[in-house]
Length: 117
Image (cartoon, rainbow, N blue to C red; front, side):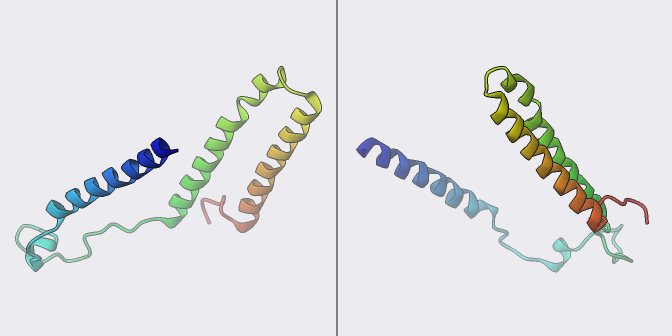
């Protein structure tokens, strides 16, 4: 028990010390307006330096990542079939696929899958 509590304390203290040490040199000492403004050949910028971000593209990317992870969870189902109870395997597989189809229907119903309007 003592070893467990000691290792927990050490695993908490060491990252906190590293974060504190890393924070000290990362602070900017001088906040200068000229240094923080974008630079365009010595002239003031005509427009915003930031590019507009497409929220629709971000939503499609997040949906892709979610379904990509779900595919990675579906792939081992075939291997598990040989070593598990067939009724429990069928029920859990059907439940998982129904949850996926429910999520897909919800995203489709909300219009998240319509790329062009």
